[in-house]
Length: 472
Ligand SMILES: Cc1cc2nc3c(=O)[nH]c(=O)nc-3n(C[C@H](O)[C@H](O)[C@H](O)COP(=O)(O)OP(=O)(O)OC[C@H]3O[C@@H](n4cnc5c(N)ncnc54)[C@H](O)[C@@H]3O)c2cc1C
Ligand SMILES: C=CC1=C(C)c2cc3[nH]c(cc4nc(cc5[nH]c(cc1n2)c(C)c5CCC(=O)O)C(CCC(=O)O)=C4C)c(C)c3C=C
Image 1: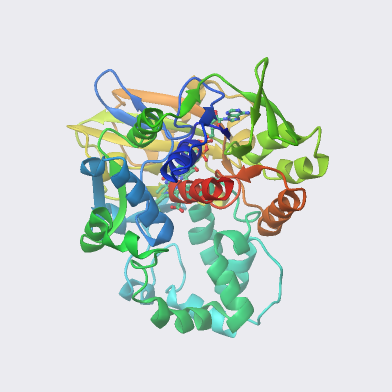
Image 2: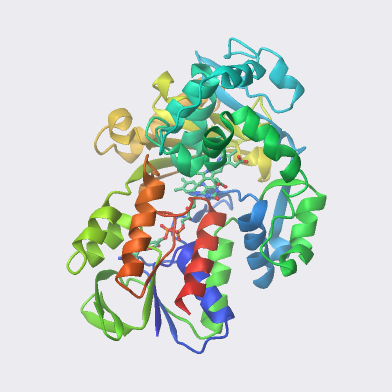
């Protein structure tokens, strides 16, 4: 029997790939909570509005993006996909809030030669800075320090720091450049600067953006061709992204997988037959375990037998994000953009706002999502802020920054506890040590999920596929 821990998108995908492989082994998935989908969660309001709590868009590109499109096709829900082309205003218009004002970030090549506030020089000047900056040989470094050193402080402050908030709600001064911007890090190490590395690889990769795929079969996909033809920047699903885990659930159950909800695993004991799982007061013997639970949770499950492994796993932290969805009657926004992010140096209680209805209109409503907390949850929102204070802070900030005089007609507040892992400096080596330990001790344990190989939906589905193929 193959056991899977966690019923988020990773666990469900792992089950899908195990079943797809044609192996006859029984697949049993244990989910600690009362629903599947994990952080993919679309709240359906009484008035029919859809409020995404976690992810809302998925990138279609590269091997991992094409793999997700293939999964969508396999599930028979291609007709629900809505692609946003790169020419769409929300793909082009991304903003930052600095010194009390919203500023558009450059979105085309010519714009990098113009000076645009809040930057004091054209962005192209950063490339000259990079050409002149001495190479530093390092094992890893924070993204902030890397960008500040190579491209200058303004880029680190106003472009990279907010971008890191918009990927992992984290502090760029702690996040690993080697993990999150591997190419840029390697370009300095191998070519001496980002610019030289960029030029050296630009021509080589020019034609590959859409064709990077592990097998020929991936290139003939209808959805991939459509995404390529229509130059999608991101996509989502009609009915909300939660349709993806819900469809996966039905599909794996129809193929014989058993999914047990409210079944939290509290211990894994490895033995000669595989792994003995403690689920509530039951003991379940499995041949293999695919774990998709956060690293710090897994650390507790293996602690008794494998304290060294447990210690490494426990050092991959997560942060908590407060999500406030707001709806206003009619069109109240003066912008047509993806949204805006706020550099941490601005010391604002919110991290940024996504303009959902600009990408995916919902009748005659303006729908926005305010994200708060992350690395700064306690310091900016207090130790356990009430729902009311989170809502008030979100509404006050949105109305003052976006100059909206109306009151929202609907809202939803949720606090996503420890929802997003932080790939801090040294993450790459830590994950290698974890995998080496598992290999060396021949543990029938296969790791997937956002704690290890990437935080995007594409990354975790791909990690689940790799784990499932290894567990066969
Ligand atoms: C606010 C936010 C915005 C995001 N935006 C985007 C985006 O725009 N695009 C994008 O691509 N990605 C985005 N992401 C990232 C993406 O949503 C996640 O990385 C992905 O959903 C993680 O899926 P998972 O299955 O690996 O983990 P999870 O969703 O965390 O699922 C793990 C499951 O394991 C269960 N579990 C935990 N412990 C146990 C146990 N001991 N026993 C059994 N079950 C257990 C949990 O209940 C949970 O259901 C966002 C994430 C957040 C939080
Ligand atoms: C513009 C405002 C944005 C806010 C606010 C925001 C918050 C936020 N995002 C995540 C996690 C992820 N976001 C991802 C993609 C993504 N996020 C934004 C913008 C905001 N995010 C954009 C424009 C995109 C699309 C990607 C792109 O086109 O560049 C992802 C996926 C990244 C990937 O590798 O595909 C994640 C993960 C959190 C936790 C968060 C909370 C503050």
